[in-house]
Image 1 (cartoon, rainbow, N blue to C red):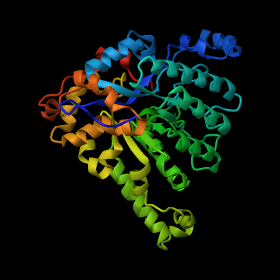
Image 2: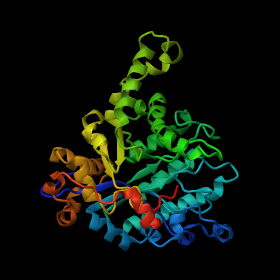
Image 3: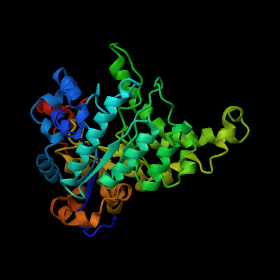
Length: 410
């Protein structure tokens, strides 16, 4: 696949953050037959935790034609797909579910595989326009590696969704040596590792302040997958491994994090007090945290703001992937063009082209030459995006009151 661009008057828009999943009943054919009776019992008592999946408009998650109409109207030619609906036997959505216990593992693994197989078919309906990502659990490394191999063969070139590991989880942390076969398989098969906001947070309990505290700290629990893999020497052993951190408060958090880690690692290696505790490990790093970032990592900056665009050179213009977050309420649909003008007016066209599509094509393997004819028809014009937006349309968050069917499911 190639990441070249053949049309220069319109941008080729690739969203690094889309969400899709089957209607719960439609997962049944993708389960092994031995789980059908158990699935029927589970579904009979299921209370769906996602209000948006009980209202009109929920079909955006699985209706391919409806989805294409929406995205075409919004100027988006391709997207990376994270999960959204409830897989069989899951207590909550994939992005926020805690790792399964030993007793839960068999059924939840079956449900996860059913989603992967449904997703492969869903992506095959629009060749080259959808990069679905396989889900795995970390409980059984051998099964995870086998599923990654299956996903590559099945055409899920979005890579692998890295499960969250909360601090109180019953499985080893990400920096443990247990997961080495997973990192090796992802590097060998060129399957990006994706971490989406919403995972890895602890249980905040039933308190009035729990939700705002969760939203305040959610990004940090997702960000830490970067330094867990770095200090675990994963990037050192696997220089071609790709890690994408998606929908984690844009991109403006990255420069501060890198400055902090660069300084901390320096103190750990020059004989300061920190070196007494961590110097032996850190001295095995051949690069600084900023250098590992520039070599191995990307940020899926959903619904980018002006603040995100202003730090693009510190983050790395080639490290930022724009995401629309369709069909979630805080996403840019159906005002993506207005969002581009608001965020990118005044930014060089070649940088905009990279952030809005070229970088995602490089990371995920989209063929921009193949997408170019569609982009020439529906993509936003370069001159249009260069025109500052004087007045934003109705703020996306306000649409929650007029379009409750697209409220985010967590």
